[in-house]
Length: 98
Image 1 (tube, rainbow, N blue to C red):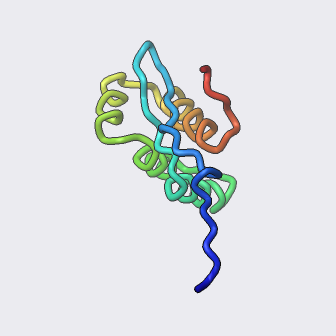
Image 2 (cartoon, rainbow, N blue to C red; image 1 turned 90 degrees about the vertical axis):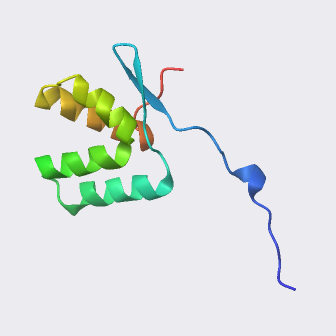
């Protein structure tokens, strides 16, 4: 029989992090598959296009949270700030406020 290594204690099964805007909590998908897709989009070239931002937005936020965000009627620069703050949170570049 081959060697078996139990890594359960080495893994963190935490909940997804959240951003807060005007008291509204928005859960940010932080699973590895999502983060790798985001990194792939960002790594394609240094010039992120509006379509890329929308793709990342759809990956990062659930349908329910996207409906909440859509109701805010954010200006594009604020929308970008929201998306990139979420990206920074899931990639470890921004610490949560807890």
